[in-house]
Length: 112
Image (cartoon, rainbow, N blue to C red):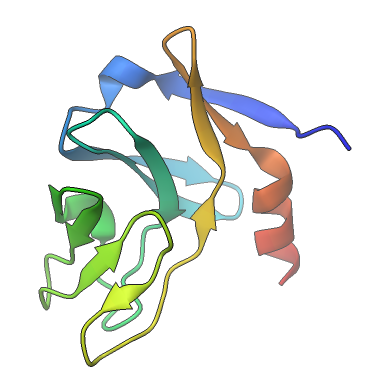
């Protein structure tokens, strides 16, 4: 089965320890770039109070929600702390300086 990847922008458009918001037909995604250059794509809503994760603080491979300081592991989508919860993660990769996102995962998100 081939993976259907789409180009969503340049890697350099996402700062180290930062994020960018990408609007999709299925809703907003937050694209993160860790200090080591690793890229992550997650739903842009904190599971606790629906805060915009794309506006959070990136540290290591985590983001802290700007509303209530809930920490999300960008690798798994799991919230750390007593509140619990998780956000959906999406396969993403960098090729030749471009960010590619797995569209089939987005389609599954819309069907859920």
